[in-house]
Length: 380
Ligand SMILES: Cc1ncc(COP(=O)(O)O)c(C=O)c1O
Image (cartoon, rainbow, N blue to C red):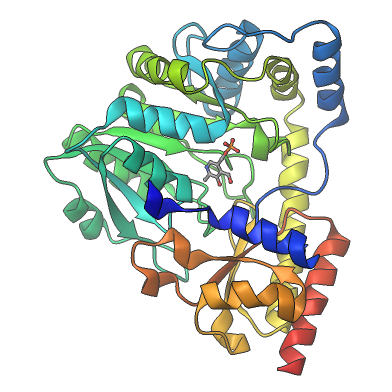
C-alpha cells in the first residue's frame, strides 16, 4: 500500500488548516443535520446504548434501512439477512471488495473514481480496469466498457450520483451496465451515498431496480451525505442474503461493529419525512448555482453537476495547467482549497486541468471563496 501515501483530502485539509484557507476541498457540510437526529444520538448515549451492538447492526436501524429502500425505490428487503450496517460507506466498499475479489480477479470501474476504490481493490490483491467518463457530460463509450470486461472480471463497481463529476447515470446508461453484468455474470457493487443529492428534477435510479439486477447487486449508502453527519460513519449494504453474508464475514474483522448510539440516531433520521431530504437537495441546488456563477465570473470553465455536492472547474481559463500544482498553490495565492481531480484518474492527462470544489458550505463561505478566486484572477 506504500504507493497510496496520504489521501489527497487529508493533504488538502491539512493545507487549509495550516494556511487558514477556506476549505472547499473535502466534502463535508459546515452545518449539522436535523436537530432531532442530534438529540436522538444524545438520548441514545444517555439511555446507555454505549456497548457493542449486534454484528449486523441494531434491528431498529436495519428495519429503517429496509423501509427506506422500499419507500423510495420499491425494493423489498429482509432486514434480517439482507441489510448490514457498516462503519460508513468506506467500510462497506472495502468489505465488499475484500469479500468478493482476490488476486487474479479484476474489478471494472469508471474514472475519475473515488480514491478508496483503488485502495480497497489493491487491499484485496485484485486489479482494477477503468473506463473513462469524458467531460462535458461525463458519458462513457459502451464499447470501452465492454472491452474492459474480461474473463477475470468479478465485480463492476459503480458510483451514482458520481463523485467527483456530479454525474447521475441515466436509465439508458444503467441498462448498458446491467446488460453487461448479466451477460458476463458479474456482481455489481453500487455506491449510492449521494442518492438523495440530485438536482433539476433528475432522479437517482438504483442499479438493483433494473431487471435481473437485484440478485447480483450490493447497494451501498451512508447517513453521512444524506443527513450531513459525515463524522458519524454509519453506512450500510443491502442486497441478496448470500452476498451480504459474505460482506458481514469480512466486516467482522475490520471493525466488528459500528457506533451504537449513532445507529439509534440514524434510525430516527431515516424515519423523518421525505421533505427533509428533498429540502437538503433544493438547498444544495441553489448553492450549486451560486458557486457555478461565481466560478464562471472568476474565469473558470465549469461543468455544473446533476448531483452530489461537488463542482468541477477547468483551470485553463485562469491560466492553470496542472491541477495538482494549482491546488498546492491555491491556498497561498487565494486562500481557497480545492482538490485536483487528476488524482482520481489512472490516466492523469484526462483530469489534468480539472479541480473539484465542494459547495456543501454556508452561502457566505461560498461567496467569500468566489470573491477570493475572482481577486486572484484579476491580479494574475
Ligand atoms: C463516492 C463516495 N463513496 C463513499 C464515501 C464515503 O462515505 P462514508 O463517509 O460514509 O464512509 C464518499 C465520501 O466522500 C464518497 O464520495
